[in-house]
Structures are given as structure tokens and as C-alpha cells.
Image (cartoon, rainbow, N blue to C red; front, top):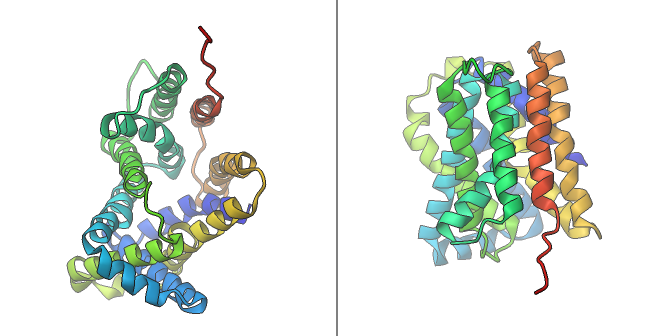
Length: 285
């Protein structure tokens, strides 16, 4: 539940940070914060040596993984948030499970079932309703580029999970390696050109918060909950609370107008995700 509540706050934090920083700059400092926190966790848990061994054994794998997530995924996601209201970007990001279905069919040659097809259609219908604010026949978007980036980020996220599907390495170790590599890359390409006068206390607080509670530590909470629970489906379904709490925070903290179409579209997306989780029964011949 802690992980769900923390994830509910990050859309608001994204928008606050983006008031002061470009997407790449936000990523630089959030990623750095996350890397430091994860290194500390590994130090406390005695896993730093494991990190060194893993990186030495599979440098190419971890470099590719880090370039996809956090570098590519969050750069695209923050780009979407910079162009769209948080109340649009955040619900669209929840279609990643649908993107995973599509990407798995293309990359892994997995069969798309009938219920998967229905879920895909409904999920993207929900995106369309949100992006057009319910004016589905007028087809007017706040930012078509922002919508495209938000959708593309879901495919990057899905690609990351497909790449890591058979990685049996401790999740804390893998995350730490990824974020350390990403931090080095970002400081080389972004940090060397950054104007530090832009980093006031508001932006600084926001990026540290994002680094801790979106990118790193919250994933550890989530992984721990999944390991401790006796019913993973109950824990997994708690994530559906996050977008609704997030909309409330965006409205009261950021002052964003929450359109009825946003709530309707989000409900359609959640419905699509729930359909995906239904047991698929085959006929006995």
C-alpha cells in the first residue's frame, strides 16, 4: 500500500519539477538521487560486491538495459508530461500492460487471445477519450506529440520488462547497476551543460522526491510486498487505486481541471486491464 500511495504522488511532482527544469535535466537529478539511494541500500544489505560482479560479467546487457530504463523511458515520459496536463499523461501511462501484450506478440511471438484483443481496443479507446477530452468526433488534442510520447513510453517500459524477463539477478542489484550507468551517461551528456542557477529549492526537492519515490525505493517496497503476500493478485490490483488518487492530488495541489472525460477514459482503461486478468477458458473438444 505504501508503494501505491507514493506512486500516486509522482505525477504532481513531475509537473512541479518541469516548471523549472527541462525533461533531460529532471531526469539527470532524479536519476542521480535514485542511484545514491540504491547504492546506500546495497551497502547496508552487503550487495555492493554483487553489483560489481554482475556488471563485470554482463556489461553490454546492463548498458542496454540502462539506456532503455531509466534513460529512454523517463526521458520520453517526462517529455510527455511537459506537453500534456498530468491528468492526461498519467492515465495514458497505465496502458503499459496493453503495450506489453502487443510487444510480446511482435518480439516473443506470443499469441494474442480474444480477451487480449478486447482489452487492447478498450484501452486505446480510453486513451482517445482522455486525449480528446471526450470530444471523440472533433478529434482535437492538447498535444498530439505529448500523447504520442506518453504511448511510446509504455512500449519502452514493456521492452524493458521483456529484456529483463529472464534476469534472475536480485532486483536491488539490477536496479542499482542500471541507475548508476544511467547517472554516468546523463552527467556526461546533460550535466556538463546544465545551468545550476535553475536548481532552486522547489525543483531540488521535487527531483529528489521523484528519484526516491518514483524511480528507486518504491520499486523495492513493491517487490517486498509481492514476496511477502499470500495473494499476489490482491496486491497487484492495489495499483489501480493509484491513478484516481493521483487525479485528486493534481486537482488540489496543481489546480488542474479534471474533466469528466478523463475519469471516464481512465475507467475504460482500468476495465481493459481487468479484462486482461480474467482467466481464459478454452473449450474442451
